Length: 454
Image (tube, rainbow, N blue to C red):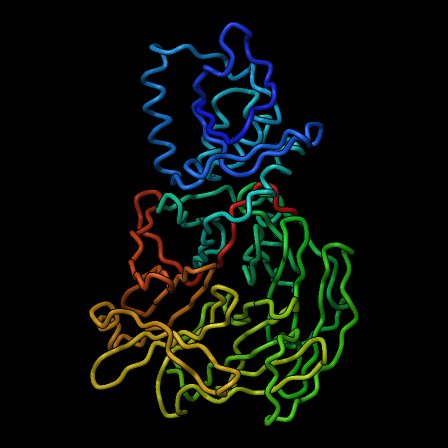
């Protein structure tokens, strides 16, 4: 049975005439439902249903199932296809994947064009974190909705000999970008396993030093992949647009006078350095994070941030084709590990440092107006102190209000999830595969969307 909560009058659903509107349905329609052929009869779900959490909904579903024999109900086969797809599209992705085994009809919905369209109308989904392990041959994710680990099917294209050991280098919306040993790029949807190889960014035989790789998308059907080449300060950029399936022409970036302060929200690229003389020589970054970079959008234009080698933050305006440097966050003689994330549309810097026989992990934001750094969050001292003396390295990724920090050293590994709004810090449970504990170098965040196009 399916419990449908609604406001206003319900359009005809072809229910049995003897008991109209008395049926209890066991799934919840959350959001605004629209049937193109019945535009004048749109209806919205009640605010009560919208406020319910997914675990409350699933709990009620189980309760209703136990009472199924006590109430009148009708077969799900009698539900209108549009309504069924609309209901199922609001389920957490992991729940829907399990429910596909209920019947052939529900299984076939996953490949339905109209179902994918219904899924695309769901504004946001809780992120999954695609974990990067040293072997680069598995698709293990952490599901923030169910707070557990999942081992997904590894895409067949990435399993081919010529693509073996492909490194994840960027992610956006519902896809993850891999870079092959030969330098080609493969886009994959980890949920469905769909993937394809992009056109070559450079002619065969022509290679350039890549400083950063980042992705950005405004919906699940398109994305942009941005590359920044060259040796500082001689930089250039190149962009792939999935809508045209082409690489745009490469263009050079010139230095912007340091006294200028660009706060108007241009299409800007930022560098954040991890200098060799700052980081201990035995603290090597994960290969997937050597192009560490994130993208935000300001004033409707893309802003890409990534790590360079100079110890400063550099901003490259792609619209004006210029770049400028930010002040150094910590003195050169400090030993620390540093990374950057995008959370809530802002670029944040995460720093693990040691001072006065203790370790601290702090999150910083740069103020364009004051041209200075401001602390916005800090890991509780009791948690960060265990990193003291461990020569640990951090690799971080953010999504929405959440940030995942992978802390690794020769002695241990730890994965901490932080909610920057509530300032809650929690260590993730250990991940076990075939009875053995897994260790990960880094992670990439994405939304689990079956409708995401590659």
